Structures are given as C-alpha cells and as structure tokens.
Image 1 (cartoon, rainbow, N blue to C red):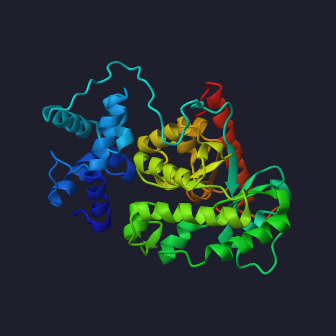
Image 2 (cartoon, rainbow, N blue to C red):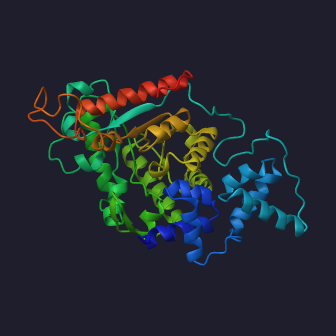
Image 3 (cartoon, rainbow, N blue to C red):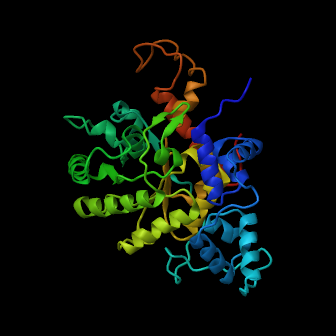
Length: 403
C-alpha cells in the first residue's frame, strides 16, 4: 500500500532541516524514521550536503566558539547540527578567520544574554517539580482534590456567569493553544482578559497561584496551519516565530501592568536560540526572567520527550530561569523534571482511554451514578495516575527507578 503523503508534515520537515536541525532530531521530534525524513528531503529537492545558515546563526556560532564553547554545544545554542557547524567553522577558517577550538569535555561557560555574569544557577532542583493536575472544572470543588494543586483552563471559566467553588490551590492556563488552533488569533483582547482575571483573583484570592498570559505558541503547525491526526485542524496564523514572540512579550507587559505579578512570563520559540532571543526580548522590555519566581516554557509539550526538548530545558535552567513545563507528560518529567520547578499535565486522560477501567468502575458506585467502559473522565483514575507519577519522580530522585 503506497504511503500517504502529508504536505504539511513534509513542509515542516524541510523547514526544520533548512533551519539547521539534524535529521535525527527531526525524526525523533515528529515520530518518523530517519529514512522517511531523507525521502521527504529528496522529494522536496533539498541538497542534503548543503543547508542554509543565516548570518545571525553563523555569527553566534563563531562567537560562542571564540569564547571557549565546544563545537557540538555551540551548534545546539546556534540552532544547527554539529556537522553543519563544523562546515561553517571550516569555511570561516579558510576565509582567513582565526579560531582556536576548545578540546576535551570541559568547557568554559560563556556569558548568557539572560543570566548576569556574577550569578551561577543550579542545573537541578533539590526536589521533584510541583505538579499541577489538569482536570475538569466540575471536579475542582471535590473534597478528594483538597491537597492536589490543579491546572484549570481560562476557557472553562470565561463563559461562567458565576464562578464555581474550587477546593484547592490552582494555576490558570490561558487556553492559548486551543485559541490559536481554532481561530488563528486571540478573540479576546488583553484588556478583557485582564478584567476577567482580576475578578477571578478577587473571588479565589490566594488559591489562584498564578495566571498564564495570552501567549503565542511557535509550533510550525500553529504558524502554517494544517491537520494533525488525533488533534484536528489548525487555522494557521500566517506569522513568523519572531512575530509570535513579540506579541507574547507585548501581551505579558500589558497584563502585568493591569493585573500585577500574578501573571507569569512565558518563553516561546522552537529552537534553543529562539528561546534565548525571546528571553532577550523580555530583558529589553524591562523584565529579567532570572528574577521571576516561575517562567512558563511553551511549544514543548508535543515534543517534551525528545532530546532537543531536554537540551532546551536544561540550557534555560542553567541560565537561572525557574521553569514551569506546560503539558509535560511522564517521559518528559522523567527526562528533565529535575530542571523544572513545576509542571502540569492532562496526559492521564490519554492513558485512561487505552486502558480498561479501574476494578468495579464498570458499575455504579460511590460518586458514580453509572459505570463506564473507560476512566478517561474519572477522578479516581486521575488521582491514582498522579500518585504513581509523583512516586516515580521521587524514587528517581533517590536513584531508584520504578518500572
């Protein structure tokens, strides 16, 4: 049976390759084989031996290498593969440039655009990240969740004439992914968003721990639009990553002025150098992210189990940014949870969809007016899933892995 060609996936592969990402990283990030990536590039007429490198990437790579960083690490920070970086350095030397490369595993850490030179940040947290459980708003007042931090979407509260009671502390997600997927833009202004958030803060008081801004995700499918199996159709914004970052920073500045420091900044980008550029945008706007108690990390949840995502998380954590991982699942938390201060997830609903129900849940019982074939909307399954995840993270921290 011939393979069905998805033009949107093909365009994504070609764009990421031309931006300097390695074929192995692309394959892992999209869940494809390396051969499929190569076939797509050949079908698109891409020269596999030569890929375009922007002058900004080239200048950053040379600067990092001159400051003592190894080629492979400088390549990651510059958004290109090690082989491409090696070619760029070779061309630089042949043109008369003087460059002495760092040898060995030890390397001098270059100064970062987002971390003051006098400050060194730990690369690991001393305890597992605080975990927010994503749940239905209908459960938020249940006595079973009194000691469980929750993650609740603004979209579920914005249309309520009367705000529901919530029994525990929670963080408020803006619902930006769904907003941009369905509309290709924000349909509510910053002022309207701020007004509703102020009412929530007044009602919930200290229970509302922090609020996400109206950020703009930077996944290629969000920008270009298309269709993703199991997720649905994306309208597409038609904008660039840099424009999305500019709008994210601008919205945060507006909300921080109207609401106060309950609103947290969110870093957006796709490659590491883009996240660093976003951090510099915040700094230029007067916000030092190393001074923020928590900073959201966007556009990672759909690739948080990849090596590229781990590199991004650990690099930003080394720069002194206390990160919250949006939508981090078990694999992502196990890989780099020690570099996060908090994370959230609703991945339990997916796990429950492909597992049999908990014993006895096929029939009516306490809290169940009727039985169910799957526990994808079951509070008992959600809490058991959370307990299992936290136990696994704590045991990993102590050096013992639970299978």
